[in-house]
Image (cartoon, rainbow over all chains, first blue to last red; front, top):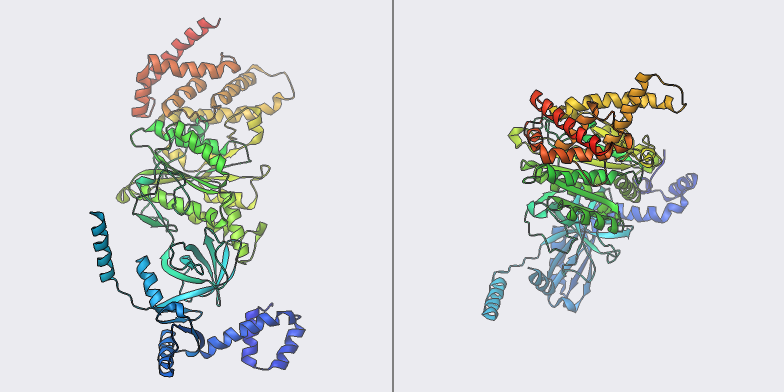
Length: 120
Length: 515
């Protein structure tokens, strides 16, 4: 039986025993897979625990109340996942904001509206 | 006037424009190369859905590239890119379109050269058709079908006589390179106009992985012979990505199905499916699907069976249309037992086997009549052809059996000698020049003269000339023979005597001119 990177990531997530896991990798001669396994492990952990990384870009700096409101919006769009938001500024958006994650995109800036108008 | 109108139009459009920021499901490119992309996200994409690559910085400019989602995995989606992948970068946004890939279809496609996505390649302007059909469609069911009952004349004596093809049949053309496979297909296309000038069988020629020069030459030849007006050429060139090679036959098949479902008759030629299998092998290996025999993926059989199953003769309730398929397979050194050839042989309703040995002996078309079969076409053969060609097959088989002895140079009894002499003449009858398909009625006359023994005292090297003269003579002096044959499609007793008389008369004149 040959295991895949995903399988190892799963094992690590289930057992949570790093030492035993390292020994297992050594026994299976797949230590070199470790970077790929860890990458997969982090993705897996986020998926299982319902955490989503979100980048929120706005044209102007936001108040904390605004930040909370937009984060809630993002959580709603991501079907109730725990959102860990990262805020950044981009004046070229002119106004409004943009929510980006690995799975969704919400284009709510003035620039996006103008772009859509051009293509309409 | 224009200025105000345009401004008004714009104002209206802006006034009615509504924008609501909506949640778009996206994915991101994690790897790209060799016409393949791996994408993270896109959690709600379905198999073979069209996806859209939005190149960074080019968002909303209309220069989008499309792809086809093929591999749906736990953490990523594997997709082939339809077109240029140069501008796609890692991290680019990918969107699902929610629809499967479709191509334009319709009457307007006739006479055009298209790529597998329906873009025109002949510089005659864009297509204006609004109708589209999905590239992958289910084959007609059992109840919608009817058994093959109408012949599809290719204009090649050896095929129409001995390996008849019916409308809705799938007949494989197989042989090494340079044995005249494409030429046979071209003959069939050209002949459709000769058979029925008002409503010819619609022909679709699919070039898979061929050189641009070859396709250009082919289109020119069709044009010269007035055969382009009822033909659609779908071409995926050698320089196109493998994804287009892979799509070409399916896209072309949908274009043919449009006519089939309208009750028309269509003929589709896949030139060739070996290259198609190579393209699919490339895509599969790059998508990391496990390789099997000859490194082809496990579903290589299904790849061709689902394509060829779409060729059908529909029942009267469904309009009675048909789609006949002539797939072409190129063998390496005559090996018909390789993986892809055996697959396609078992899918099709018979095969026309071309041999380079025969080709170099001067037997052209180089059809090996012994190995070629048509499993359903004989049901559709015209009565006239059935009557005269049944004998042809038998006599040729006897001749081939004896041919081996002759090489030892033994003394032969007169009976054997007679069979041999006749066999040589029959082989001569079946020879035909490239791109000169013969209408059905003329074929009947030529084969009739051969099997009824009228050629026995004509020297073998004069047979071709005699036949040509005979066909011309009947056309000039006894045209009613052709007309009756065309109308009745059988040799009645009356026609039999008429034909015999005509041949005898012509032969007497021929002998007099050449003492």
